[in-house]
Length: 468
Image (tube, rainbow, N blue to C red):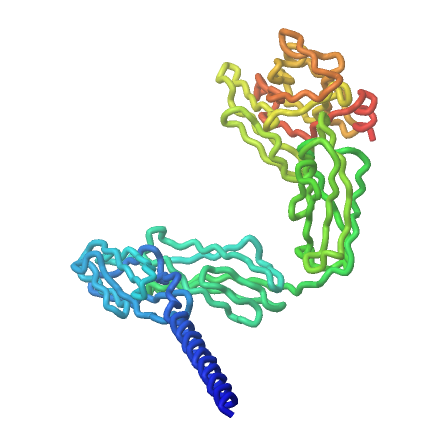
């Protein structure tokens, strides 16, 4: 009996110890939770205004603050001014302009996190009001769920308050952010308005159309590639969509080897290096809907056209100019010398030079309408000019009547040292240009147009190409 009672006492004591431990642990968990709550401090704080706030003397402005997280344990903030004789600030964030000058207004946390944000307040005695607002955009259309950035031009440029209030005439069609980013919601038309906040009452508006996104169900590439691409060659890839009115903006283009061939977001492939690459176009919302095409890029070949924007070529003579339009590189020559007679010049130069292979593609041809009258055309490189002289290119006439001028690298040399390019490996030329100079305006005009620059394996291949 005594042993039984003793056992109970021992067990009771043990039970008591266990219960006491449980109570202690329970209290400890509660304490940890309390400490965790107390340590929810402000991690970021920002005054919502421009970095500099102009404020008319005698006026005040209530500043707005945002902080993260949204519900800190201690949300009390402390406001201060670097010069209260210029601008005072209350502990609610209201700034009062006292005298002309500048002061820095700072708000900081009081929870020990040492977070702060500041703005510069410039006290002024007059306001330059906005007199006009003009809204523009890259397009007058956008698709559902697409975002379009609007640009606002404010007049005058020195307007005191440039902050605008953006609104949409129909938020069910499109919404606009505080910075003028418009997002399409559903099909329809909408007017976006930017209003001045300086009291001038000025507004700017723009009418936008939101188009319905028509999902793709199939993609097929219609472009057929029968030959290798050249480095720097631009090739637009055309596709057929199903349905035919599917939203083209839903396409995603990619290359499995951008170092060989890159592709733009509009499907223009550019040869980058020697080798093979696969171009893929897929539906933005379903990568399983796709089509592919393989391109082979060959070093030493040139195939430059101007059917799409081409930054490879330029005019390299001071005061000359050029534009690419209608599939042509159109150059306007500049005055070279005042004479008499007055002579004009505009050298046609390839950016970054060129890579040529005198064995695989020895025929280098330029199709362009030579300026009328006497003048000099020189195929020039960093090794010197072709055949070391002026007007050494051989001229053919294409089927359309436009002249084609070519050099034969298999036999021709460059410069006074008669440098001959390798027929076994590709050669990099740091300078590759046509010097088009000494043309007299009285004999014609000061313009010329380039159709293309290409390389061929033989003269027969060139002749066949220009006569087809």
